[in-house]
Image 1: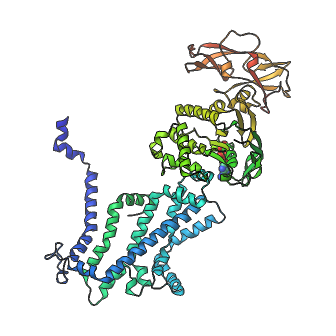
Image 2: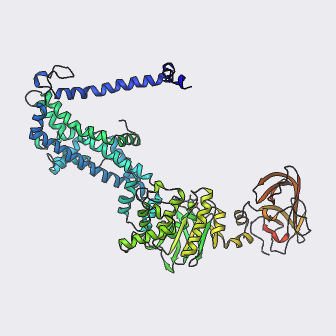
Image 3: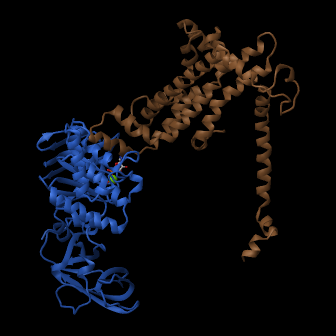
Length: 283
Length: 355
Ligand SMILES: Nc1ncnc2c1ncn2[C@@H]1O[C@H](COP(=O)(O)OP(=O)(O)O)[C@@H](O)[C@H]1O
Ligand SMILES: [Mg+2]
């Protein structure tokens, strides 16, 4: 038996044709996804004269771009802006989306259904349509060109609220009632009992929110005017319009900007995969 | 320890009434079991006592004090849930300590209480574990530990054993009983399982469709069921009921033969004669009592006894034979029950006939 199992013909015959097709497709997909990233990285290692030389391995690799970009105060500033904004918005979403989601899931009150429908309906309005009212609102309140101006539309999201509501519905009432009998107040029950029970959903929400805000471009571009308040994507794109398009700088900035995303993916891969499955999202 | 009193307690959900004004007085230190089929309002009643459910009418008194408007935390009761309701994200010790959440004891005193409870329940070596590393029985003990650390006025149990396997259930039944014996805390225990009710209760409250049918000790209910429902609900296998017609102080059975019926308040001639399978045995028939015979249809061997189903006049009756005596299928068997072991019910109202 052992001899038979190790014969190559048998091993091959055990690989089903479906597998081969799947692997091929995944491989092609992988190449398509990775190629732009490779070009980004490779361009960032070239000097201005080599940019249009499309070799993947630079003829004369150089770290000059990195030195220059990291030494450029503006870039550091944008990086910090993006970090602050993404972190605050993420914390805010984790807190408020779950607070509202919990309330909708676990409390019976008059108008609950209407509130829920109202929140859901905002999911159906595309961002492009919301930008104008946001802008009018921001300018009325004097929020243009401020952190708050960039952050306020995303401090709570309908999607996050909906996601958390669905998850809190899965938390057994017994858990909350036992806590009520023990004398925990409602806020503590939410914070200490219900929240820890939905950590998979919370981590999914946090990751999506962070990544979404880290890469957000359209709204930050519209609401900011001064360069100190740019987020990283907005700042990077401003390289493109200064004098001539400095591709090597843009690519270097983009490479650095990708780093946090990459780190998040590497360390939280498990949660992201689970989060995608939980949320029923497309990756 | 405390008394609990329910006074015309009503619960409505919108238009539907699920508890119809029930009255019940529970003594200090008593172990009372609410039993009835699923959906009869046991949990609702218990949850109203706990304060988890608002009451629609009547009142609840704990230790003589009306608690209708009190929050659960202000009633000083502890509750054990069917799904244990112990938190997966904290250790066993922390779970038990939740029972002392509002207590003003110092940290070390709390710790001591938790350890004491754990010791009583045999959980000492598991205190630092997470619930996911515990068996079902251990989880249930944690839930009980959490309830007992506070030294509450009463324990409320809502089907705490129904998620356990049969063997563990029997064991936990005994443990809870023993604990009650030790602590003497007033307890209200909800179950749909009549065996649990019979084995654990000082008094059983039989409920059906949001009403109390009968309250009594296990033996009261077994010996003097007030109606067909209780008679069939208590005892296993269920009581046999044979339709009969009253005539001149005797009942002519539909299965043939007749039995003498004690003078009673029967209003119609149509009655049901009840006999428990344990009382219907293959012995020499004497004239007083119920005798039935017919071919054996099914035999259930239990070891300690053998249940025999016999066919007689289109009806299947269950009797019992001694454990080591196994009748053959198809064999013609005669079973007999003495007259003092028979029950009589009005066929229309299904109420027991008062002697
Ligand atoms: N929140 C609710 N809304 C409407 N009806 C309910 C609600 N909770 C329970 N009921 C109804 O009340 C009745 C009694 O329920 P319950 O007390 O849980 O029964 P048991 O515990 O005896 O199985 C059932 O018919 C159930 O459908
Ligand atoms: Mg129930």
